Image 1: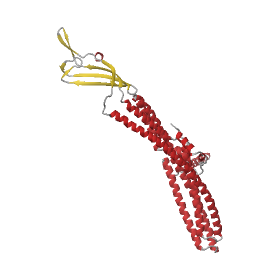
Image 2: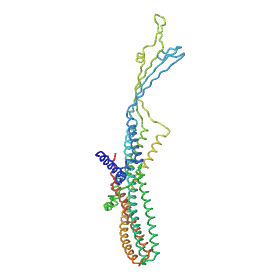
Image 3: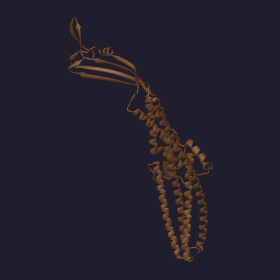
Image 4: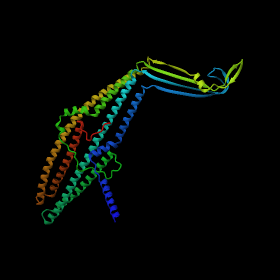
Length: 457
């Protein structure tokens, strides 16, 4: 009996855990964090940073010596010259040769140094690109998240209005039976109920689509039961609007990633020019070579004036006796190469000018975007405040119309119009609320306040 109770308790706990897992609702921070960890575009940017790290290893490797070894073994059949004695003989022989070469750049017009500096800048640029991608994804997720919240509240408004219409239909039916209002008004109320049901269905579909859009943006594999929290701490305070557009722009110039990317690209372009100019200068390279050879052919020696054929000398004896070494330095002076060096320098100078223009354009775009975002945010706040005032007025007008309709002083058509205007006013308050919140988040972004702190690698 005790075992049965234990099994029942475990079953209840597992069932509760399963239900809790199925009804999990995501917060904005959870959505953003998940997107930052799983978005494909972000993963591609992370791979780009790994590629730049490999490029830096290549640049560093140019400072190191190069070492190469070569070994060959050949069979010679017929009349051949012995590579160790120089005598022509008609026989089958085997020869082995080996060598090694070591070289190092002593001076190369500072190209290697500038290439390493460029590689370091490329790593910085790739990290900025990754950060920019993370910021863009965060904004997109926030926008989609707020859209879900808006659609949720809008669905509640439509459901509440439908419930009111259904109650009004029941009340109107009683008034018709009592002879207070004509039957035609009841039919108008019935049509309003049907329209309300249609609006609820449309609102449900819109909410479902917005949830799917957010789930797909997060790239969730299972999103049938995906949902977000109803009660959120996302508030649009007026603190950011207390700042002036100029102050926000000055702060943005210090923090915005797109400016850092443009500045880093400008520095990379400067290094490309320096690398290209390095080809004008002479290059000096040191080298060391080692080689030896071994033959397995028979040897002919004179013993008392008589030629005597003996076997080949021992392998390592030949390798030691036939070894040779050379070392020195090679100076290469560029004189004429079909204008390729000059054209390459000019080409990189053009790229440098384009980078300067791009940085200037990014500053202008940032200034315009900040002032536009500030104006949009302030306009969204004014629109929301006006919508709230309009809602209060519409609510009062609806309450008055409801009283008049109840005593037969207003027909159903005019009453339905009043109810429709109230519903539209409620929806407008919700729309302007979330529009203001999102525009505030954009303005805060320019001021260096992220939706979710991003960990910089």
